[in-house]
Image (cartoon, rainbow, N blue to C red; front, side, top):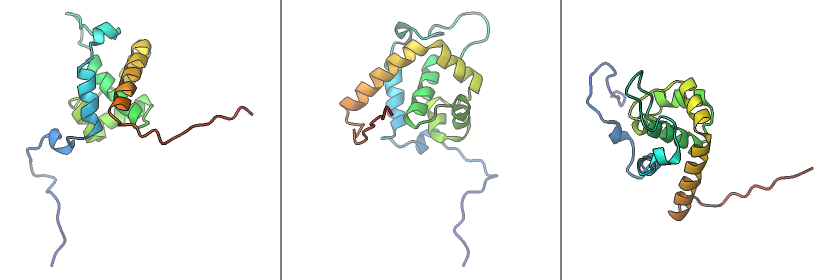
Length: 143
């Protein structure tokens, strides 16, 4: 009797990233939430691409990546870059794009005010949907 075998890594397979992301996954909430926003109204840089020059990354995709990172405590631009290459959920969320750490960092720097507003809105949404348990209490000590 042999072992249970997995897939042959050299065999071509037709798969969809959608198969790997459960319908109740937080990625789908983030995706729907960001797609519902008017990023131009919120003041995101490059919310309207120019007709000349190299096209920028879509701020919606960058916001999805950043919000995902925030929810999973991934704050570093380099770690977010790595997640975009190795994490199937992130690949699904940003359509397989792989922005580098400098691009991610510049997005954060260029959109500080808009990012804060989106985080407030997302937290309110999650609270209203009962997605946050409110079981953690943090107490500071000034001493």
